[in-house]
Image (cartoon, rainbow, N blue to C red; front, top):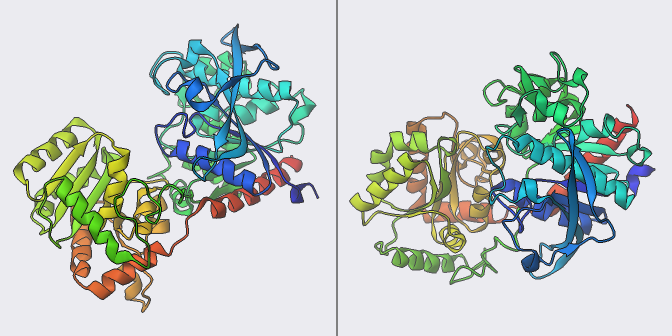
Length: 501
C-alpha cells in the first residue's frame, strides 16, 4: 500500500530555528522535520530567506541549478532565487538529512523583521507560497504531503487545487495544515486573493476565503486542507468553542472529522538538566539534591537571600494572554507570600513598569530581568522550585514541560497544552492517585491563581510529597519522537482523504 512506504514531506513554515524565530513555530519547524527524517521519511523544509541571519553563518549555498524563478504576484512578475542548507540535527553539532530551501526575494524579505504591518504583508507571503510550489516544480519532486503551518502558508492547499491544478506532479499530493496560534489568521482585503490570481468565486460573499467583507487566509486552509490539526489535544477542543475559536469555531466544526490535536514535542538535547551546558551543576532524577546548588547559584547571582524558602520563577512575554492581568490583580498578595521570585521577560510597558517597581520595593524578595537571556532561562528552570505560567490561553506551551524535566514544579492555568501536560497533585490525590506533576486552576482570575500558588508553597515544605511531584514530572516523556510518530499517522489520514476527493 502507498501509505506503508516512507513518505515524501514538504514542510513549509515562515520561521525555522536556528535561522529565524519569534515563537514556538520556529522550534517545531526546527525539530519535527529532523525527527520525521529519522523515522525514514524524506523531508524538505521551505522558508523565506530573511536578512536577519547570515548566509555564511549557516552554510547557505546558492542553487545555480534552479536559477531565477519568475513568480507572479499582484499582476507583476517578481524574481525569486533559491538557497539551501542542511538543517542541524536534534543532536548538537550534527546535521540531519533534511535540506532547507530558502525562498530569496530581497524586495519582500529584507526588512529586518520577520513580520510587518506593511501594506504588502499579504504579497510577501503570497510570493513565498507560490515560490515553494514553483521550486517543487523545478525540482520535479512530488511530495506525498505538503505540511503547511499558520496563515503565512495557508493558501497552498487552494493554490494546488486552483492555480496549479493543471500540474499532475501534485495529483497525489495531500495537504496538512497546522494551527499554532489561532489568534493570527491573515486577514486582508479581498484584493489579496486577486493578487494571488485566485478566482473570484473563492472570495466573493459566501466563498471559502471570504470573511467579514475581506479574506481570511486561515479560514481558507480550514476548508481546503485535507487534514487540519493544532498543537495540543485540549487546544483542539477549545478551538471548537466561541470563547477560544477567534471566529473560526464554526468552520472548524464543519471539519470536525478531519481536525486533530497533537502535542508539540521538546528537544531534550537542549533542555535536560543532565547535560545542560548553561547551568553550573548538572543533575538527574537520581541526583536531585544537586538541584539545590543551582538554586543557591541563582539566588547569589541576583543578590537574593540564600535560604530554603521557595523560589518561584517566571519566563514569559509580559502580556495579558500570559496571565499578567490576573497576576497584577493580586500582586500585593503574591508579594506578601514568604517566597523569592525571579522573573525574566518583556512585553507591555505597564507590566514591565510593575516589575521594575516591585524589584525596587521588595529587594530581598524579587529580582527582575527585562528582556530575554537564553542562559538565564536555563538557570531559572534549573534553580527555581516552582514555575508560574498562568496563561489565559496556551496552544501548547513549552516552559511547563521544560520545568517538569528540571524538577521545577509548574503552577499553570488549566488551558490548552498546559491542561494536557500538567496533572494537578491535589485533584488526583483526592482520587487516591499520587500521579500529579504540578498545580493548576481553571477559573481565570487572580484569586484562583493565588490559591494554586499557596497550595504549591504548602506542599513544598512536605519534603516527601514534593520529591514525589518532582520525580513524577521528571519521568514524563514529551520528546519529539512520540509527536513525529503521531504526525506520520496524520499524514496517512490526509492521503486517504485526498484519494477520496
